[in-house]
Amino acid sequence: MAVRVAVIGVGAPWRHLPALSVLPEVALVGLCDVDEVRLQEAGRAYGMDALFTDFRAMLGATAPHAVFVLPSVLRTVELATECLDRSLPIFVEKPPGIRAAQTRELARLARARGVLSMVGFNRRFHPLVAAVREKIVQHGPPSAIIAEWWKPLLMHDMGRSFPAPVLEHLLSVTTIHSVDLLRFLGGDVDGIQAMGGRYYSPYLDAAHALLRFKGGGIGILLSDYHTTKLERLQVHGQGWLVELSGTDAPYREGRVFSSGVWAPLELQPGGSTDPEGFFDEDRHFIDCVAAGRRVGPQGADLDDAVRTMELAEAIEAAVQSDTEARP
Picture 1: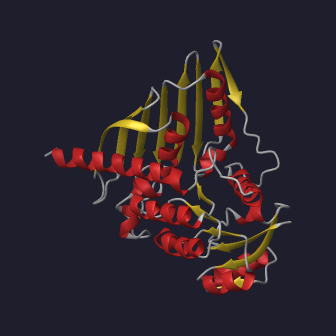
Picture 2: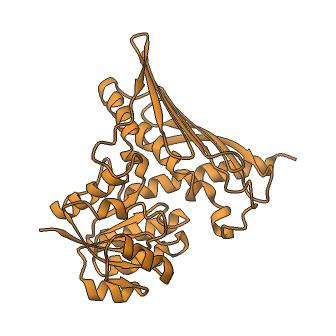
Picture 3: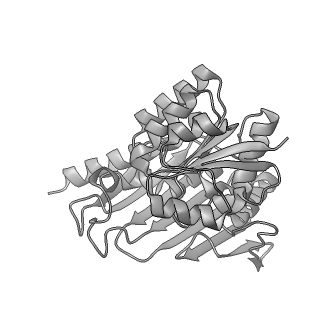
């Protein structure tokens, strides 16, 4: 039986809808968005007539088995809470609330209701990251992981396009992808040193951190919000090294060093609708809903997301302390 899926928030480029519309295990039963023009465009693109501007009306009319909660980050907690109160399994885009406390409350509610949840850290499902994960499984924990996140959120308009709550916590809202990958590949953290500053704006626009993983090894985060869109990842093990990079999009190329030789890592999305992990991520959630099983360890449920959010806030606090300590 197909999983009946309703979607709240269809903002372009509709990253999840391409996957949900072709997965044979999915029956799309409703789309909701507060923007009528955007909603109608999505309806035409995916052949959907069940279109709603009121999410409660959609949930009542369509009786979904699961809901994708994909609105503005400022409304994620409100909408996810309503779905959990109705005991509906939810997929929520990152971040699940701007603050860790909001994520903790969602996680508590999901546990209390016995409801399955998953948070959209799509880099965990990126095909090149999957290759890195396989190296770690084969060879053991890495000695060092370096994650770089450069994004021009503040470069062009100094934040006019983004609300202040987002700009005040960019580590939790955007850089959270790299923070989560550090945890996903290296494990939980028990030591943080960080620095950064407000170099070109009134917001913390640079954040750099050195992390100590509980299981051994170190993690390094490098990030700022005034340069080009660029993501890079290095993972170092005994006798091997993997490098991934991508400009304007996550990880488009990679290479691996092993046995004294460099070799390319080819991006092979296969039957995916995109090369960024959305297809495999969405399929994973749907499979878990259908089977009634947990989404971990590859997927992040709300409890797992709490730890990523807490790490982002701890780095942010350390950067803030460093900034305040300097004249």
